[in-house]
Length: 329
Ligand code: ATP
Image: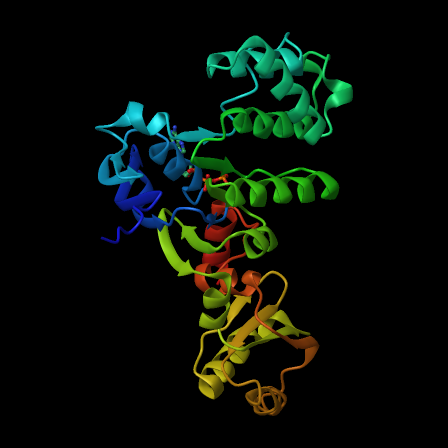
């Protein structure tokens, strides 16, 4: 008999409201076991709220979710035994040292004193925290805390690990180290769900990606699927005169049949193209319309493009800025 592995996560129509705000507005997700799953979205998109429901920290107002087949509400204690959430750990006591914090976690997780000490030495070494091992946590920088967080979640190495923006604010070396650690976790049997605002991080690490915007999944697939969905090339234009934007958009729609993504503030237009040969026709049309260009270029679609095309705003745009863009557009 063949058995299909139950997904690490299945969410059906998850909803969370805060007053009038539907922070999570019907999210469906399927995360296969043994993969890195990336959840991308701008600030306020609902990523953290979604994770909090999956990790049993918030009760959904609608829909359902299962972790390895266990309902996150009805079987919350079982689910808690299967997951690790960074951000929850490493702060037992701010006055304790890094080593002491890790030892406390190790003991709480059932290791002997000797095992807990050995594990903390190993993990501190792995995250280049050996020199800071004896310092109290309150003297740690943000980056050091993040590394200690991940170290703490590795003591037990649960089957499912939630990493909420694990590399935000880290220097490039530590970021690369985090990426290696995340890959290692998956190679040794864990499933990782990570949220990120860095599109290159999702591109490099995630087997599949869900793009969340305003509480909904607006696209899902591998990085290549998502890139292919916006076209084979992307034309970037900057107009010499921002007042020409409406005419330029109309010409582009007429020629290639797609709605370009516009940033009114900087007079930038991004045009996803299925056929890069149309670029010449388009440039001639713009010249005929008397529109002068300050810059232009053609590139392969990146995840940034995908994000812009799908959400109409950049990954680093906050919801408030996105709303402002909409008003301007
Ligand atoms: P970020 O990248 O900034 O962490 P996010 O995608 O994780 O963003 P959430 O933190 O899930 O977004 O927030 C989604 C929306 O819900 C936001 O508008 C936020 O202000 C709101 N929100 C989150 N938690 C609460 C709460 N406890 N009470 C009221 N509103 C909340």
